[in-house]
Length: 472
Image (cartoon, rainbow, N blue to C red):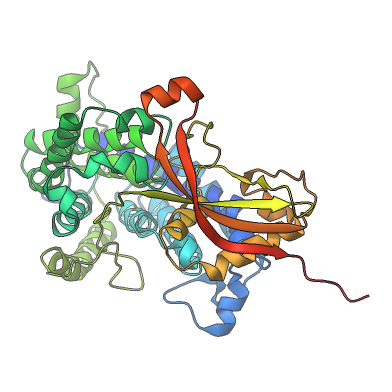
């Protein structure tokens, strides 16, 4: 059916299906590595206690009980199915095989997100869920990708980019006067190895970057809907700007996933016009009737659900990273509506004698001023991100005090979340949390001291805590 099929977009489908599956693989692997220590039976915010207090919003397999073993089974199953999709094996079969595989990933990851509390309260969680749901209806290698589903992917990219652009223009004045990047690279949640160098670019170039960002997010998204080759050119602009963000910071899989989604507007012909590749469009079979009916029904549902995020785009009080239904479909997106001007970090220290204090090292967040920031994205270090919010004044006593208690116990699962334990697995006598002001060193300071950061103490966040005395 010519009106139903999008022949000439085979590369787009391959990138979408395999790329989204690869991000799911990272997300499930992250859950295996971090969820038990953060949210497990003995975690900082235990899911069993959450289930005792209230019923989680939306679907979750853990509604009927949580154990760390069940979490590992869910995440492990997600890793296996994701890996099969990355390899392209389910796509060799009829359309119902990859459809079922992606819907299982969607249900499994939604089960984790809906009990993840603040550690899973990030916009890219709902973005991955929405993208995974859409990927289920791209069909298999036997049939042409459905045009309606590709259009819904483009609509997702539009909401993601235009929503982010609008939240910036409505938010902080530094976006409107083009000075946002005077601060952003230094104060972003988790700088990467290049962030120091980006920060020290000339200020006029920073203004050009911000203007280019506004163009990419407020103008270019409209051209994604245009006929080829305009749609592919617009997608290339989105991809380039997202890769620029990948090069300058750690934002988990947000930028990587956006790059993948933008390929929904890239035609095979546009790629062939640039790269010396042959025709990679296979000979398709006719679409099964049930598949056509299902795609039409799902498309109608998502168009209906799109009323709320569309309304939000033009609302005076635009919501950022909001879900309007329990299934994490047709969401609102946005990022960095405000830019912090100063960077503060919470430094956690322990003492074995009450006199000498030694610092715990986190994997991603700044700590030791001489340690170059590392690259972790598209992997997501959830504890490190929450530490950034804590330093901004976000309420964190519900999980941060338990973190300090776990350090006093030298809890092995908790220590695995860190880069460095100064006590080599032995429990300290005391722990405390101190607030420091951080800024990037200048070129001269970097040459003289070898430090990437210059820091100064700003005050005590949590006074020294000791282990509870045991009854003799």
